[in-house]
Length: 101
Image 1 (cartoon, rainbow, N blue to C red):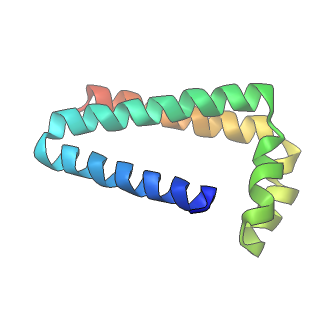
Image 2 (cartoon, one colour):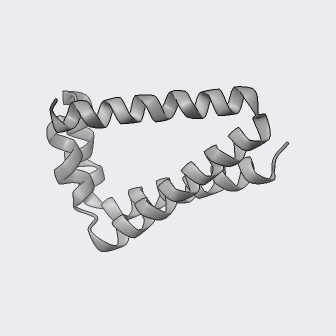
């Protein structure tokens, strides 16, 4: 099995497990999603500060043509700003999930 197939399989299984947890135990599921969003926000924030070009070099070649054009023409002008704003949004979602009802 290829590395990408393993990645998709693990991601799919993890997603189903999170869905089942959220369905059976809503509070635990909400907190689990809060941890997921917080982790994503921290990782994206650190990546944006350390190696912002990875967002262009890593995603553009695999994107559909309209998205590839956006990445190469717009996002490439200020990858740090785009990635940090997305990271901030992810952290805000995590806080909302953790504090919400």
